[in-house]
Image (cartoon, rainbow, N blue to C red; front, side, top):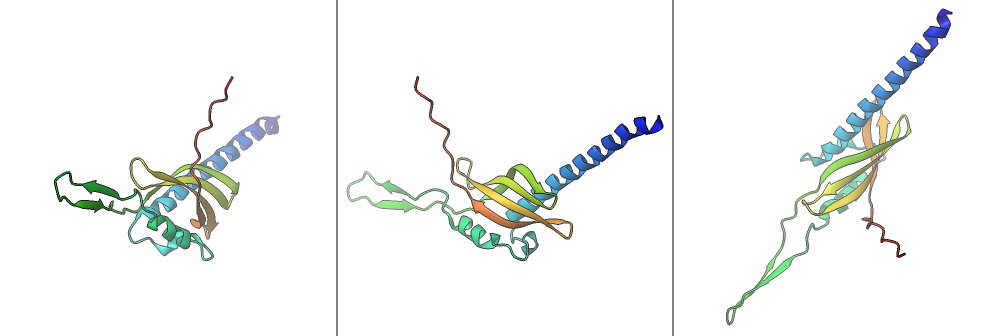
Length: 150
């Protein structure tokens, strides 16, 4: 009789522990990705076999906005080319999915400005109990689907 009442309590306790670990892992993954916003970027954020630094360098070179031209309306006026200040993107996480207990996919983005965000997919791997970035990929921006004509 006692086993019948203890078994559901045991499963509830195990489920609570599993969700607590997932929540702690989500926080740790978010902190690792937020570490990309620090200057200089710590090398400890990446796994030993990571290809993320090369892709990150490409993301950092990407211009946020195209240059603009200001033309004077005065006679014999000059034209000025205005190059926007290149600021590194601020990385954040939107969603995390666990593939295995030690591998996760994190959807995130790199925000260059208030108006321009680049979607990024992070492949996270747990090494020695610490979540690290194994790879990251810039994704194509997806436009919302067009309405279906009726």
